[in-house]
Image (cartoon, rainbow, N blue to C red; front, side, top):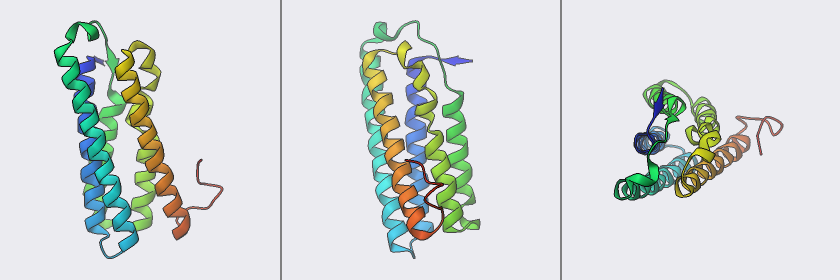
Length: 162
């Protein structure tokens, strides 16, 4: 089932908010590890910034609804990312740092925005650029997490993605 672009933006806001809350919780859960806590706190702030970008685009859409008429985008991947982030947040107290990092890397790698990338040609240019920026943010987060995981011995170099 498809979603309107406005609904999709609402879902993107939710996924960015959920990821911000997940990273905040990770910073608290692993507060005893200064390096990990600082990384997670930074990622939380960046996710909150991504949410603001989506909110701005959604406001523009509301003011110019005709620009976005007739679009129908599948958002199941976004909904799945939200569900997985909430599950990881719930599971944090029962897992170690290595598992938490591994799971959040997989989550960033799956990137809900990445899954919608194929729909970019159906989107107005401004929304396509927003998706590209969100995808770049996911990639940067994944790379930072992989670097941290490699440094800590959670993943081997040949397992890390570039």
